[in-house]
Image (tube, rainbow, N blue to C red; front, side, top):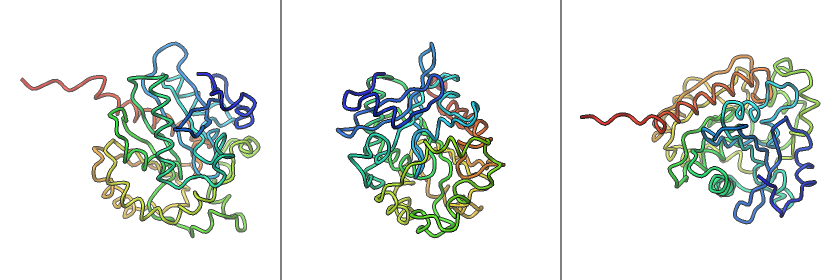
Length: 308
């Protein structure tokens, strides 16, 4: 896939200066808004499905291509297991940051992301199912996009680091107070490869103002969005997840809100902090997420026999 002419190669390299072997920067036209991202594809075979990865707030698409250790990258693992993986820089990040310096609110982001995904699959993977894999604020965007997905190609979704009720004051999102953000985002530092915090300098990005302003309204928005999800959902909470309440009552609430989802799986990942995809347990999480994608693919590959 060639970069769009609206975004020259040096701009793409500026968005993602380092990436793993087989991972390349791309741009997509999302209804006139140019989004950048990172793409990996299977070497020789047609993809099982397209994995769309959406990063959290204050990060970019490089979150899914961690450079601190070879085992961390979702992009390389997914391609090796037969998936096309497209990690998007959400609106307000990467190539769209100049045009959208304040970003977009949640529902507008969902529309932009959906347009980008549909443009990508129509041109490069027609007839291939789509699976959403999203983290933190990106999970909210994934939920909002899935709620209004108007084509039958959406197979399911896997989200991490996202509940309904914040466990901290939403004002913390807009500024670090005494290292609070570091503790919330990362948890114990020994959960991550030693080079993580040097390598993550190219992954961290300013959180756009409109995105920040949406954080406090999620519990209200989710009440309208979650009941409209009509695909299987898997939710992962790290052992050291500190942003969200995720006790038994909170999980029951999530299940109740996801009333139209045909299947809901809850997983708790030990020895992990909020930024799961950059830690030592990233590979375990990514394998579980891709296994869930395989489960969502199974009905399409092997339809149930008709009763005689």
